[in-house]
Image (cartoon, rainbow, N blue to C red; front, side, top):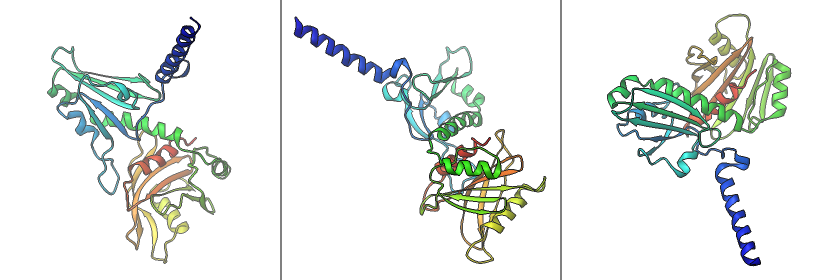
Length: 294
């Protein structure tokens, strides 16, 4: 009888541990899984949502799809799929009451964004679903996640607070710097996938592109006087104050994407130079850093 009681207790403990690993400690949701910008897409038999989510990221020099998709047939969303950070569930059924989109946070894991889309027909789905809004919803969720997961550089954060009066999460990899009057350049100085941040102060309300070009030419010259960085294009600010575009090296065949944000008289620009690899995640990591500016 003692052996049986011990065995029962042991199995009860094992079962409790197994359940805890599934639902999280203390009943909390388990930590979500998934690569950056990965989406599990269920039930998109007509590939309508697939085409929307696979649209290319704007302002990159080469085409790169916004999201990596894992396709799941309708009703097969179970197991590890339920824990992925971004999920989209499509339900096309003539019995549905109409078209609807619902968003649920932390449905099965945390952090997590699940988008439920229902329509009565494929034609209705194609007509009503706003692909740009869907991409923006998941994009902003992923940028927020990146902002909390990238290791920080406390020393550089204190330094930028002292120089420019702003607080932001600066990646720990930014360990190389150059200082000038009203200007700081930080970089990971990587041989592959170089990421840089520049900080500079503007003078009044003059043309932002012209001031950025002037700061770059004055403080980050190339190998010769005829070589210098310039902003090739500048978008309008989005609702978060972000501007995007491409930069180029005058007098040399170099360039790449950038992300810019202005707060008061301070402008912060994140640059990527990675001719040998895809640039989406690299520029999104910098966007995540800029999103934390206060």
